Image 1: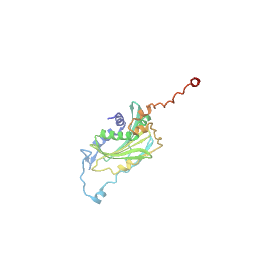
Image 2: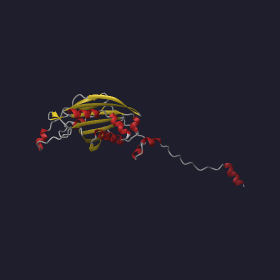
Image 3: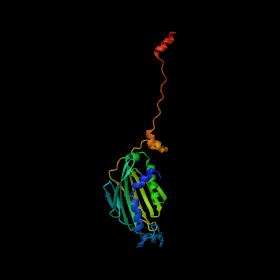
Length: 251
């Protein structure tokens, strides 16, 4: 695993909460589920089955002091910590609610700007996705490039032993947002889309300028591109001394 992937895993603090919550709290039809991915038989079909689907819990906007709003089904459990990395510190925070065996979580990781500026946004988002897949030991089912107020993001679904995971990542300035919903695919999560699309930014920072972006697009590390020394300009041919030219004419 690349070093940046390890940093991403260390900063996404919700994963431990999600794994513990899904394994210990998920219930199926009022009894403790032996596995969070246990398949539930489909009783009925067509319009009758659609009518039996629960409407899902009501979502209430939650305003985080870190500068964003997200809608959750209840008051979240909050966890904050700082992760030390060679380039500085990464401040993280997670906001997690578990209801009816479904876990909703929004987390942030604030990186030093030089860490973000050194890589293309797409590479950073891909490593965030891969880090989550590896941490959950899951399988990537689908993904799609998305945006939030012009900031780049990625939407994807992961199948894992702790359940189906719908996730969204957004890179907003030096901050990585991660929204997750973990649920039993046999039961579903009716409020998942409402939660995942509820993120609103409050006074977001400007996008970070990435030096050496052309070189980065060509597969060259941005830091290397910035440090490269340009080739010296071609020097003009030497001009003979004027006195030498007069002596030659006098001969």
